[in-house]
Figure (cartoon, rainbow, N blue to C red):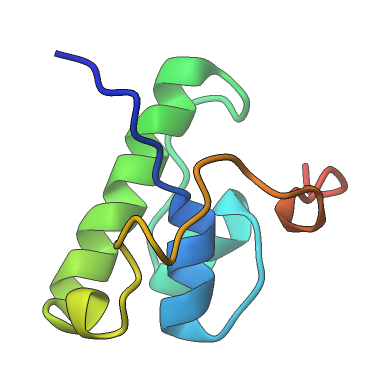
Length: 88
């Protein structure tokens, strides 16, 4: 089942790590290797899920304590300043 809710994993990662980087650099930061072709939906979804798994493993309860995944703290749509169109 799909949901109308949206979670900005890039914003969560930034808040938890104190960085502001795109997916490929986030994978490098975590030591994970990029899988597949960038900007291919299934491959991007897989890599983003791996980043979420890393965040849960590294930060666990801190994700909730810092409010990183509450509806109140995350926008429902990406904000223009959060979109990095230069990263390839």
